[in-house]
Amino acid sequence: MLVDIANLRVTFPTPRGPSAAVRGVSISLGAEKLGIVGESGSGKSLTARSILKLLPGNATLAADRLSFDGIDILAANERAMRAIRGKRAGLIMQDPKYSLNPVMTAGGQIAEAWRAHHKGSARQARDAAMDLLAQVQIRDPARVAQAYPHELSGGMGQRVMIAMMLAPDPELLIADEPTSALDATVQAEILRLMEDLVARRGMALILISHDLPLVSHFCDRVAVMYAGRIVEELRAGDLTRATHPYTRGLLDCLPALSHPQPRLKVLVRDAAWSA
Amino acid sequence: MRHRLKALAAAAASVPITLFGLVLVTFLIGRVMPIDPVIAIVGDHAPPDVMARVRLELGLDRPLLVQFGIYLNHLLHGDLGRSVMTSHSVVHDIKQFFPATLELAIVAIFVATVIGIPLGVLAATRQGSRIDTVVRVFCLAGQSVPIFLLGLLCLVIFYVKLGWAPGTGREDVIFAGTIPPVTGLLTIDTLLAGDWDAFHDALAHLAQPAGVLAYFSMAYITRMTRAFMLDALAGEYVITARAKGLSAARVVWRHAFGNISVRLVTVLALTFAGLLEGAVVTETVFSWPGIGQYLTVSLLNADMNAVLGATLVIGISYLLLNLLADAAYTLMDPRVR
Image: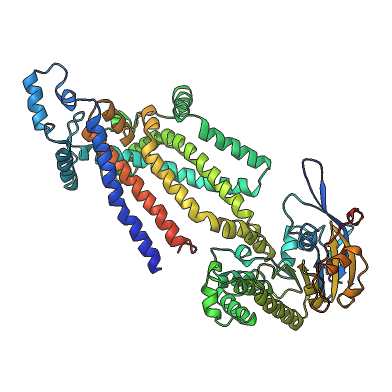
């Protein structure tokens, strides 16, 4: 088991006492593609980032079990976490405009990721960066390596981000809404690229999204989160057999070309879901 | 790169225009003020014919615009006129007084930067901790305690009570006139002369006023560094850097600090400019013979040539430092296009 989470809780202090953002999530993951779906604030990002212990400074992390390849994350110190971050598990965020360092070149940032976990000269790191840029199908790696993030398009930026996170050869890739900030046509390209790289390297993937059909198409397994809990977990192919009213409600809200409806259904929430 | 240099050239080209405006305004203020420069020279009780003659000599009977033209012409030939008070040429006076201010400002900004920036970074990385609170109170005090009070307290404690520091002024009287002026910076000139006793004396005299100014500037630099760093540390690229498995030091200094260094250069340049122009109070408290004191005394004595000259020097320093800050932005920040 690569990732094993039991009863994960993430809480934030507020003036009116602690507020729980993740309320007892249990999930495990092997070398597979897991999709986590949910609306904003459902706790899907926090759940995934708990694996890397990259939570906001004021968050409190608790769990019955939280381990990565047998390593107890809860007990691990910063030093131990640094050996996991990047090296064994990478994180791709939503918008490369913000997640890339604006004053470092793309090549420099990739080379830095490579050098953080490989022994090698600056020259070797630069060559590795070029090679990685080619792997994420950038046509002119030499030019892009010299470019600053603001000179790249969103799709290019996200390719750079992927190259950077693949540099140390991790076993797990966490993609936190990697295509939400991109144009629809570019979204497909980036997803295909990720699918290809993950398959070729035999990596595990956690794909976080609020796009249920996309995730079910792309992943082996889907977990649906609502108000800090996993309300339903199913094989991607069984999505039509979902039983939880929230999942059903989400699916019903989607327009379908085969069954046109005069009015789209609206999701009616039940307070019992978040109890 | 080419259009960056072009932008920089445009900024540089605006300097003479701003300077011209500065000269014009200062000149007009000097002439419009209800102070008779003739009386400043000959005194209240001079006979009327003497007054008339001096008025004619000074060219004060001519139209204002012509007077300005003459002043400008002299200025372009490096002549700022003669000071009534010191009876030297203003250029000579400035050469005497400005290095004293420069020396004070350089030491102050150096100390303030070396302490202030790490302190600001430290406070930002430990936001909300006890260290952060201590740093913030320390800075708040530095910014809000009036500098004359701080200066006087220093003198009372370190000079009067403890006797650790020498009194006011730049050097002890026994060294006065023994050091040949080369740079005008006493600490360097004494070193050049190889006179260790004089060097120690100059350094001891410098310590208090420079310390007071450094504390004041450091408070500002620390506050700005802390605020910039908090902003940068909240950036997503910092999470990316941590997700790459980089060390905390590298995340803080390479990634977060790397993003604010250009803005800090601007803060430092403007703080330094502020020290050059705004050390008047400190110079007065410590009887430091700098440009601020020269300007104040000249103003009180209606010595308009001296006032104009000193204002110009301060204005030019300010403009040049501003230009330097612009240059830093244009050349260092890849986003400026």
